[in-house]
Length: 339
Image (cartoon, rainbow, N blue to C red; front, side, top):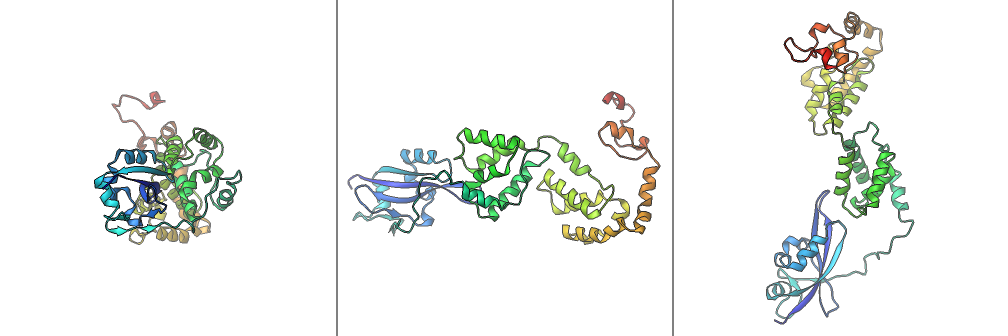
């Protein structure tokens, strides 16, 4: 066989939410007009093992680091590779399948973006029901998850996530976006933006976790407390199981309410919320005062614990000699020296 040159079109495309793959879209024999397309199942570069070994293809694959990019690469086919894409008569084949001529007539023409090209995405994002992120007492990971869900609900493509993101940032977060955009990374995949966002604004201390797990009911609606407690727990640990969420919510309730909850019945969050909603009238009725009298009486019997206050836990009422934060005799550091 004489040497043949072919032009391959490689494209970097999404495979799922977080995976990018390189696909071989078309092949054109140099000197011929027809462009042949590979069927969907034959497009991944992993299927074209011999082609992928060529140094020029390796270089092209390396350059396709961002989604949505394409490369047209002309390759001189050696005998081994040539036999994979051409039969003895010179017809274009692959894996024993004669390829179809690509039809581009039905595909929309891609024009250069106009200065007002952001208007459509801005119009779409106006339907996102999400408060703006400013890094002011907001959990970055939870907020970003909600942003992704809203974009998916509105059928916004992942490549447009960064463009949509800028309309829901303010303050320091908007400054971060401006810096990212100026450093010419707007073509980077969403994974890159997501990682930078979380590295910049993600919670790095124990304060959030401590507050979520120590948050307890003091007064008001039991249902409202449970909803807030669960929201704090999910912010602190999005992977926390439903059973653990239920346990942490229930043990943060007063004992006289826990005694009314049958643990075997609390198999779902919905069951717990339903039970607490039924118990809510206790907090507003005359009987509620009597039901809580034991708790209020217990609180009135003791002044706020000074040991807890020094440790940063205010409004804790109990004898100081049984305080869990009290340093045991023989400890190196006393409570006073600790402060």
